[in-house]
Length: 362
Image 1 (cartoon, one colour):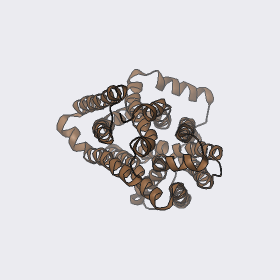
Image 2 (image 1 turned 90 degrees about the vertical axis):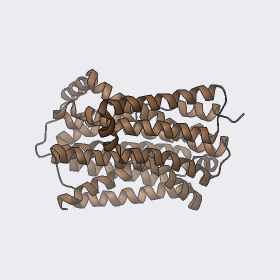
Image 3 (image 1 turned 120 degrees about the vertical axis):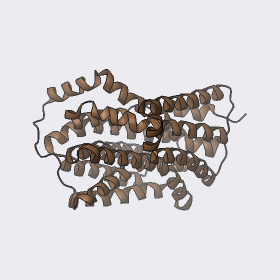
Image 4 (image 1 turned 45 degrees about the horizontal axis):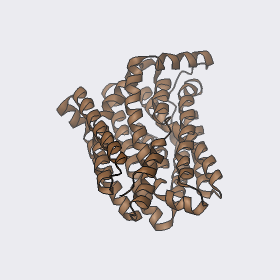
């Protein structure tokens, strides 16, 4: 494959990785009913997936330094495909949980190694442009997935969502086997003490942790909403699947538009002000949601409006903070990317269950 087509392959791998969580969310109510289990049991599919993701994310960076990016990308995406197929055919809720865990281990591959391979193959402005493009695409894919999942769930049921992810994952895996080049020319010997020392260096660096944890914590807040959103809108608020999709589309639009024009927003306000104002918007929306939920004041319109505000703030600050976090240790591309992406999905989501239990209409 010529170099100009490589970013397309990177993008395809990110689609299969990022859509695997959010596309299933609109079907949670139907999945709980099908398996005759509680809402919390189905929300646990996200928790299991993220535990697998966290484990995989911490491993892929150092292992790719020792065995090559291509080999790890192919192995990891094969694991992703196996887990996706398992979700599609799941006969029981416990089988689904296991498949989601396996899928999570594989899902970390592309999110970690795509950015690492870009740093390997491209330099300067070209590298920054591609990283920005992939970050914007990743954000839009993750935001758009629940809408697509809602439409598929409405048309053919919850297995359709998992089936689409499985089919796409297998297709991307075949393309990688055929066309993905190796970007790591000189392989390093793997040493557990060296790996542990590298992560210690990363996690004890205040600047790195600050740049990594800001988007990670905000991402955890957003995923808490995603985990609860299907039950919240369709059960608590009594909306149909299509109405739920419309509300999601509003939130997605605010997130996607700011992500697409993030470079202009940053140029207009400056990097520091973009981060500052973005954090203010996120904090205001979260604080307002907490206060309203404690007072049992809520509606789908309030929820959608405040989550749109949160999404605007998140999209404005994300490119600046992400770029800073990846550039702090330029000699540690693989482990740094693993640490950044791993911490992004480590937090569990008890707030999601809190939302489902407490955001009730009076």
